[in-house]
Image (cartoon, rainbow, N blue to C red):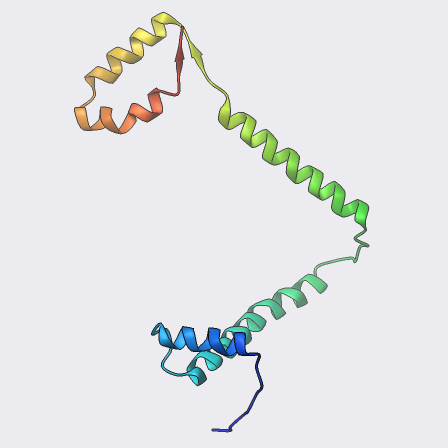
Length: 124
């Protein structure tokens, strides 16, 4: 194996030594080797994706305006999803009685599991 000497700030050296002392790695060399292998694996995953992107079709210019449009679309999707998830369902007294009857016919363990689900309904 080849030897490599590097200079590090004291804070980085302290951090590395902490990682080894916590038992995550046997030696400083093991820790540095682990980081390098992680970086190699990341490059191996990303590089084919970049090449696939280059071969995927016509190029387009991505401007600040394009990014702002995409950001706005994403924000709108999130807001729409949140709005759908927070809507309450209002049920009539008759429907409420029907739900109570169905609920009470369920086994006790099933009722306990569904209590949280049923409490989201607002009864009138």
